[in-house]
Image (cartoon, rainbow, N blue to C red):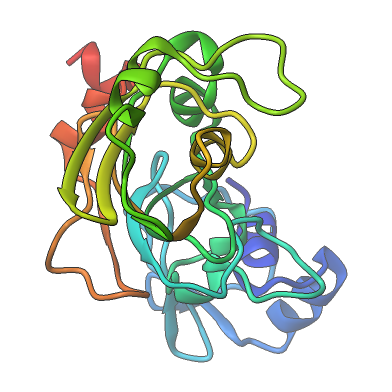
Length: 238
């Protein structure tokens, strides 16, 4: 990548402003002041701006985040804070959520800048499993698990939901695993059987389980095994 493009992305400024900063001798590459933007960067080069190192990103990035309530999973929202607030990463605005959560839902969110990888999670034809811890308003009815196994009719939907696994943990606490991602699906499934979701927490996406060591708002990079479990092509080929 050209130096001026890299600086534009890292600093969030236009190429014209980058040129001005270069002329002002605020940029070094491998310890040498560089005043032109045409230099082609290699991964080994160290770039600084006012003495601060700017990290080069080599390849796609993958993170898990423990999302707290009150944040949206879109990357730009005029009314609510977004999960990008928690990601202390270069050009974090290029990351997106692979499978969003509602503003009041907590738990596992996967953040990446790899569109093909996230498509394998969100595409309906891949039937990626997701597991939720669900707190209900009323005690679980005796026939709910069977009804979820058979599929329920959601309001304004033509097809029944795909078979879902329901495990009762307490009178009003259950663990639900679904393999599709319809709009507000978990809340609507319980509404269809006459109950209401009070709290919703996502524990798992596919083979990736939320790290118990992550407090709400904390995140970490995914391991190679976790990335490969979704079928990232560049890892499967190794």
